Each structure stands twice: as C-alpha cells, then as structure tokens.
Image (cartoon, rainbow, N blue to C red; front, top):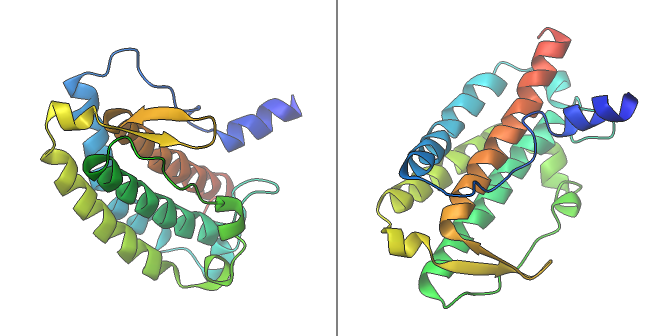
Length: 180
C-alpha cells in the first residue's frame, strides 16, 4: 500500500508511453501543452512563499524550487537535442545527470524567476521550431546512449509534453495536499 502511494506521488500522471500511432492530433495537443506550460507553471508557483518553495513534493523528492530549475534545465537539453537531430545524421546525444544537477548550488538556492524566464524563452523557441517542422523532419532521430534507444523527434515532442505535465502535477498535487 505504501509503495502504491509513493508510486502515485512519483508518477501522478503515469509514465510516458509512446502511442502506437502518433496522429496529427497528438502533435497539436503536445505542442499546445508545451506552449502553455511556462505561463501555467509561472502562475502556479509565483504565489508560493520561500518556505513553500523548499518543500519536497514527496518524501525524499526534490523541492518545488529544484523542480522548477530541473524543468528549465531539462527542456533546455531537449531543445538542443531537437537541433542536433535536425542538423546531424542520427546523433548520439549527451545525457546529463539530473540528480547531480539538482544538488548544485543554483538548483537549491537560485530565485525561481530565473528558470521561469528561461523556460518561457526556451519554450517560445521550441514551439516556433516545432510548428515549422515537416512530417519528414519529425521522423529524424537521435540516439540516447543509455540503452542505445533511437527516438524520433515526433516521439520526443510527446515525451517533453509529458515531462512538463508530470512535474507540473507534482507541484499542483503538493499545493492541493497542503492547502496552499
């Protein structure tokens, strides 16, 4: 029972699953999620107090502050991965150690506005890029060295729409549980 509760706290919207057939509607929905995430996140977290920003979203989880910085860092990496796949032939991307990044001074102490502004800019660029890609370009791939998994850009749009929604739900659920 306790494991079920922790799993629900870790994955409040479930894990990402690539649809068997990705449709034009999936793509439009995912782009809309990416386009709206920065404002939705900003509006949700700006009212939080410094103490609330230091609250982990689950036991042994990141604080709200760390989550906000993580979303910004991760989506920055994703944007670069799109660019690599569009300009190189199935590149092997460089992963990053997100857990280690979350322990760095900036992730633990920096004002959240820095990452909110960064996320807004990265998403504006990413969404603009995505809206201009052809079906052929969306089939371009990169390889993640962990597991040597090939990923199409189309799949990656869905992955990052899920990723933003996943962490948004972490914060939203914490706010609701705490009655903030």
